Amino acid sequence: MRQLMQVMFMAISLFVTPFVFAADTYVIDPAHTSFGFTATHMMISKVPGEFEKFSGTITYDPHDLANSKANVSIDVNSINTRIEQRDHHLRSPDFFDAARYPIITFVSTKFTPGHISGKLTMRGVTQFITIPVSILGPVKALGDRQAIGISGSLTVNRQNYGINWNKNLDQGGVFVSNDILLSINIEADKQ
Image (tube, rainbow, N blue to C red; front, top):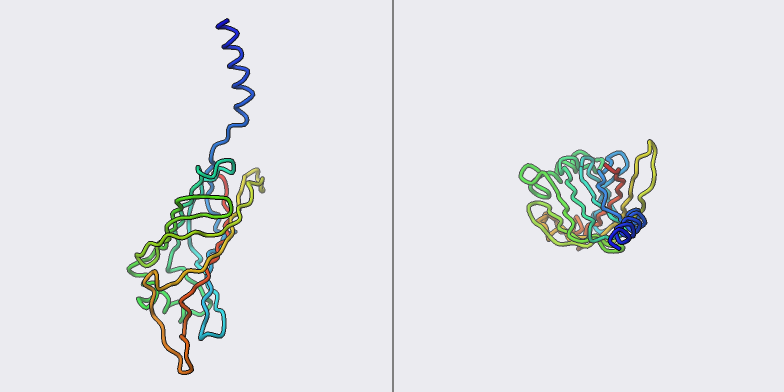
């Protein structure tokens, strides 16, 4: 009887093992990723920008999101709005104060279907955010590697992070909007 039980256990293990999934770790691919933002300028136009240097890992289990997590670091000095004078001002103490706070970080606390929640730290201030996202993959990419994609956006109030500089306009309104649209488009490769 004991031998029969052992054989049954081994047979069940062989059948069940292929269906047990574990979280995989993915590294953000800088060639196929962007971290962007859009601010309203003088109440009339949208001005985009992005950060060109960043790194991060995503641990992702599509079958159990509780096992998923993300950790991202963004180099504030890599800010690019296509106007060097504006980029210099954004790096200054008026905005990001990049000399004192050179890194923006995001550390997730929870993945749920359609959302990633976590702690976003800018300019030394940490706020809890939830980003509506779509997560695609994993897919088989070139060279037999696996990749996932994450895209999403949300609006944050920059003053919540101590980014307060502004000027009032003569006709009313302000020079730079407080609400900033953040957009993420990530491709990450399995380690």
